[in-house]
Length: 263
Image 1 (cartoon, rainbow, N blue to C red):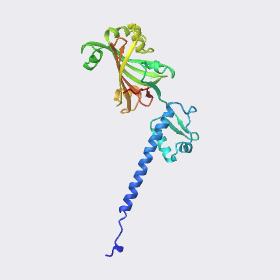
Image 2: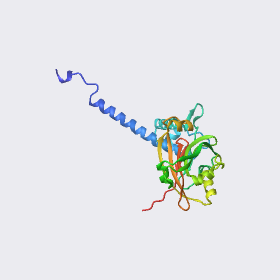
Image 3: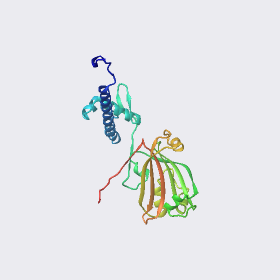
Image 4: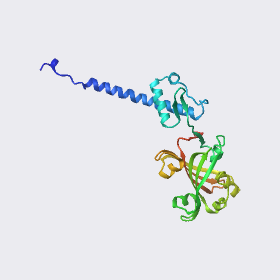
């Protein structure tokens, strides 16, 4: 059969090239949308839109020198996070906010968020427990020695914000029994009990998936990402007195700090 009479393959090299180019364009648009969502999220957090309404899609496209399709994808990402929603006749409005939690000062949650409202603590469990080895080692007590364990659900203006598990040496923890733990940071109570200021804390921050219990208490979807802050706080004389495992709702808190470079 002459070459000119042979049937053409509709999925030949030209079609493959077109598909590859389309996938590349789509990937680049997704990358740009993710980057735009990061920028807009920052503005949402810092209150750049005080009226609660984002600029029109066409305005955002001009401001950020991108296409309206990219803007729409970025807004979809923010909607999926529960930060904004589309309101007919109004536009894209802010429906949730994240609260700033500093990492460069040693402060309790109520002290950290005092400008944003009232923090309350629901005491879900409190009492002596034998110290597991990892807890005992960090608090410098003998494994199996009783320590005070406190589980608190912490709310800001009634909104579930964090679930805290706290371990305190029993000689200090006993004095906490009967104090106003519902409205007072443990940090302030420890300073009052010991007559010392807290000195420093070792912290580790990571993202973990919410287990069934944490999700239910925090009113978060099971398996949702939460920010886990592990913090070991020391008195001014260096004694470790407070080991905490704090699960923050990742959609309601943002961590920030000031770092200095030293070589």
